[in-house]
Image (cartoon, rainbow, N blue to C red; front, top):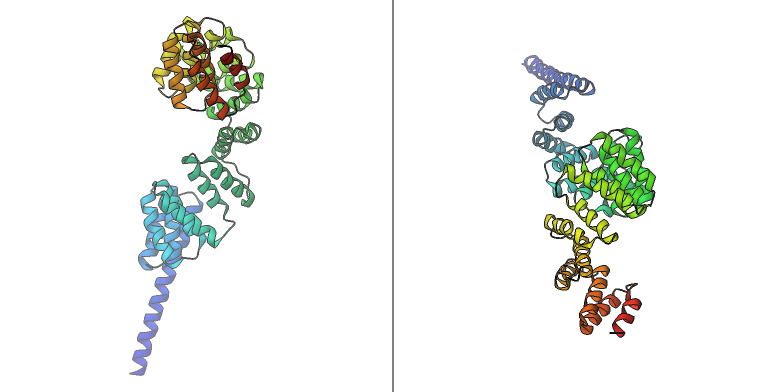
Length: 377
């Protein structure tokens, strides 16, 4: 009897060991396929391993990784949640699960996973990167750049993702940190030479730094990549308008934009600005009206249109547009400056003084000049 039970126990042990060994073999085959960049085939091996060993955390994790690689994020979430049961203290499980949540727009869950990953491993660099991307998508650029800095400080490998450097440069431009933006954007350019948005952002940064020829060069390269992209034409026009003060050449480039995209708002605004700058106020009006019709919150265009009406002695229309600009941006100095000039023409000292008082509250550089005009009324 003893021998019979002993043999049965040995058979069960052999059976269990055999199943475990088979599961491990399937798992190892899956790893080899994953390394060979065959995620779909790898998943099939991991499935076989899990069929033999349902609580195989390693296989669940690798399946989730492969599903993420295949952009099958829902199945990734299923696999990674199972992996998390046995691997609750393994940082990479939380990272991969966070990534899957992020890709399915379940941002709160993604944030929770990334933060848990960093609790377990505070130098997990990719978690900082993805947290930065989440803030980038929310247009919270200061927070995003802070995460990017932590990513760069903790990563052990060269960052070769051109989109990472592009996004960093884009955000630095938005933060008016143009010199650093150029450094980041050039790193993007080193990784990918034909991404048009990198050239456009470089052109923008160079324009803000008053580097006219460099800016034109970047916009020309963008135009070479896509001659139908009107942004590069607007960029060149702006350089001629604001830096070189060559309004004729600026008008030439703005017209090229309108040849591509009729009634494009920035080109219409730019044309109106150039006409106002050269004393052609009546010619400016239809373009500026088009600009504000295309973008009803275009503060600068309302200011410029108000100025056009002021210079053509259409004072009621001037005030209507200047007031609209003030409504959109109560701290807009130019709108109030021109409004004072209109009220001066109308001999309305009370309203002129009201505009000056509003400018005093924001410490405007125009206060002394305008107060003298009001006092003289």
